[in-house]
Image (cartoon, rainbow, N blue to C red; front, side, top):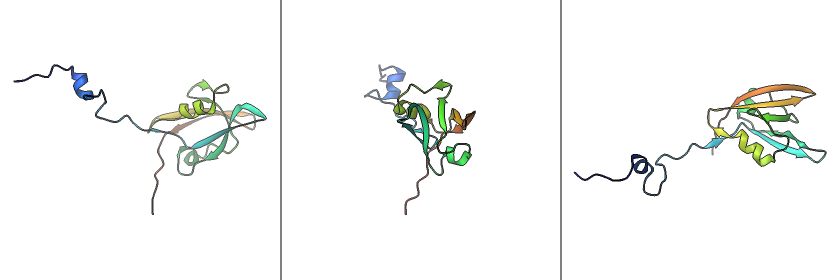
Length: 119
């Protein structure tokens, strides 16, 4: 018999070092954020995407302020970094620390993808 000299991992990954299984797609929770010129440290909810976790939960409102994502304060982060933090594997939980009307609260949402129906 002829044996392959490649390590088991190399054989699994293929010739180009690529995994035969694509990495999971990152999905979000369905909120769009903005920073206003009056306060560039605050990440404010600008839009809630219908059909995704934030809208389904009913716990997040327009103009709510996100203070933290998964236990990390976000006030000094660029919005692109905050968006990246909110994304994860479908089915994983995104924990947000938020404030509305001077009340701080926590929200845990399951990340999911939007189902698009084409006509």
